[in-house]
Length: 358
Image 1 (cartoon, rainbow, N blue to C red):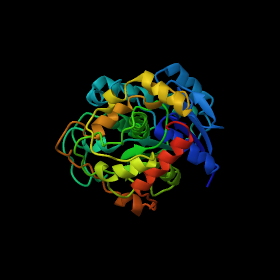
Image 2 (image 1 turned 30 degrees about the horizontal axis):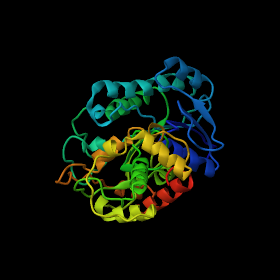
Image 3 (image 1 turned 90 degrees about the horizontal axis):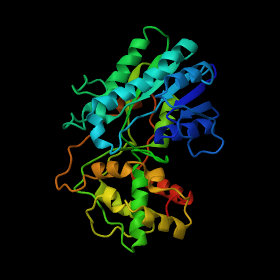
């Protein structure tokens, strides 16, 4: 196999950061591209605004000209997060960002061997109606507007002009670390724990009645992506990916509380977007605990809104299940898995050691 030179677009996000870290550990030549640099030591990074067509053209003719594989993990989300998922202008922005990069890249780099694109379980329409269980990659598209389809159709059309393989990933709820990410539940939970601890309260479950859910560790997803590069079993295919188990928030909440040296206590229904909005109180926690001096926005982004949605906050009925099949991935040769409770314990231990949470 010839050597791989990997470009990760969306380097400052949860997936991009994990992928750069795992690729670096594996000895792969990797460069990250994003407006903000990820908080990683010794990371080769190029600042790039995907809404700037001229900047994308310059990157394509310089830093991207010799890459063999591109992982596109960039995402535009509107402030407030949830409402934008159905809005056409947000969908068009996500398509335009991809087009701004791919058009000059394919013109400048005929040696590009593969493009990897991140989707998710919204591909199965789980955000608009109950989905078929389990979601399988071979199913016909669920009829709804989604920027996933815009991006996928665009790249498949470009395959008629250039010789590259396309791999599509549909991860479940992704857990990992990134600053200011719009969908980072670990950050939202960590700040919530800090506020509860500062008040002398137990870590009460803040959500409503939860349903059965699946997760994917960002590092496990990164390992799968790296495994798929130049792998014929993955070329021009779509894959679901999860940790391999299922969970309910109420059942694993004591494990999360233990990770912060706290008691779980009784359920305490509350919106994290409201309860954790006090910047002055957060800065007092930062100062008293010797944490890294991040503002709430710099640490959590819009993830409190994401937490409220996934915690089913304020609702007594559980949400419809959104469970996917990962049989296709195992048949393709990737069988790694992770216990989701162990994942939470791992990440919160690491994030506390990083002085992000007390």
